[in-house]
Amino acid sequence: MTTAGLIGENTFPAMDRGAWARVADVEAPSVGVSDGPWTVVQRVDDPDPARANKQARDDVANGATGLSLVFEGAPNAFGYGLPARQDALAAALAGIDFDRVHLRIDVHPSSRASADWLAALIASRRADPSRISLSFGIDPAAIFAGTGRLRMSVEALQASLPQSMAHFFAIGVPGVLLEADGRVFHNAGASAAQELGIMVASAVSHLRLFEEARQALVYAVPHIGFALAAEQDQVETTAKVLALRKLWTEVQRRSLLVPTRVKIHAETSYRMLAGNGGEVNRIRTAFAAAAAGAAGADSVSVLPDTVARGLGGALPRRQALEAHLVAVHETGAERVRSAGRPSVELGDIVDMLCEAAWSEFRRIEAEGGALRSIAAGRVQARIAEARTELAAQYGSGTRRLASGGRGSRDAASELIDAPRQSPADDGVISCERLDPVRVEEIL
Image (tube, rainbow, N blue to C red):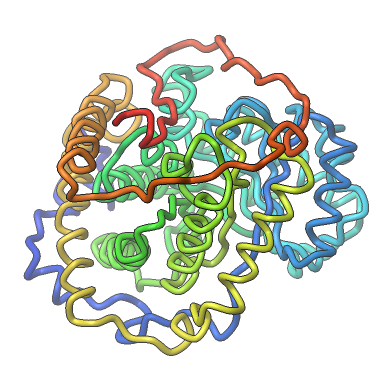
């Protein structure tokens, strides 16, 4: 059922754990992928563009080196987000120096339009594209699963995306164009292997789109990136980042490409957060950020501890940034990132995770690819099973949550009075929507 061509039905054979042990990552044998810290990304998700701009400028002034534009309707907006308009984007980024700050657009239903908006804004500022770090979050699978809707049929989408890619190449847009986003699936209860498997399946579908647009894959690969969720379980988070690099290395080799390093964005897990916020959430996010950064994530975003209750104001945003900066500069994660080597035990965990994720990827391929598997509800059914298993693990004590997560003494003062937005109900086709569910809610 897969598309014929260079990346055809027999490109990705089954691989057991022993085979994965022989796969060398692009950066192997060292864990390190960079001589400096990862990009510290703060979300720009306030529905008021002027207020969002003030927050963004404060964040950059206080140590943030990246901004993630989260528009309304985004699967990872958690009910808020900037208005999906060109003027809102321009207002939110007023006074931001594009040469000094990494910019990413979080995946959302109008991703392709917002990429044009950002490209036009960059041109109007007469900024040098070669000096700007950008990521445009275009991932139809994450949009479909996270919103339950697509604005055109799978066939029409697959036919139109190659033209869009050719358009972006023609106007010289730098950075990541297509992203494989696993956060929607993680926050709905997916296992680490399922999250990785769906990301690999999405990324392979992106490669096929470049093939159909008659773009050489060697030039296309640098424009594909990944976004994943980072949890307080440092071993699993570290293994997940390392496994993703190994999986993508193998995909490139099987596609007759010389493997190159891929861009990975990590955001702290929504599902791990306690509903009352407070200190326990800040501890969890600091551990998660340190683990993702040490393992080699290029950029990391920390969710405010109040996100499960509402839109965070100045205090929770500042606390999230401070927790992140401690993870970058005080935990030793940067030294591990630059010079560390995985232990034998961690290497075994990575290979086990690769084996399970590759099996999930091949299962999705056999079901016709990510979009068709989601349309049929097969991915959702497996995630429901994983969510049940996750609850059983906590119930049996295999996994444990710290008790006594104390919330803020004045929670109301930490939140902005902004109503949650309802998911959009427009679209040509629909599927079972994957909503974020916190672990506390399934126990």
